[in-house]
Image (cartoon, rainbow, N blue to C red; front, top):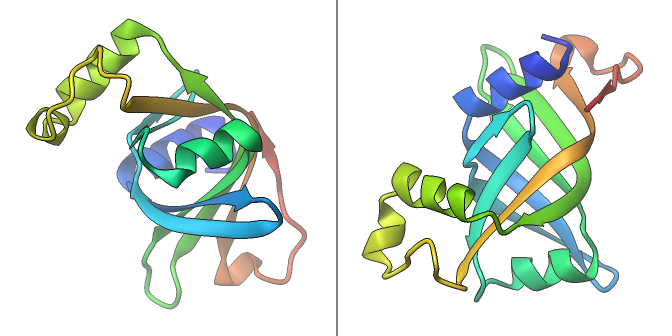
Length: 141
């Protein structure tokens, strides 16, 4: 599990995450339903009206924390890097197909309100109670 593929598998199986951004010098964290990950990055979708979009435009450094409950505490994966906005029409069409609720909100692949971003490069690490006191084993992607 301690490689990029392990990270991709983990986040695709555990879609609820907490995403941290910064507004000036104040951290901001929110729960999000993660979109998907593959070899090209960790993908998120949001709306232009959300403050999140402005936070990323101003300071693209973000961190997402994914959690899988377990017997004692569970497993956590933290993924950090610089977010990149994704404007590719094909990806926007994929978002519309993967997330039918977007149509219910009146969005289309051409809607400027449909915002996609990804973490293509950065670092990640897993945490469990067993690894709590050990040095982090960082996975570079």
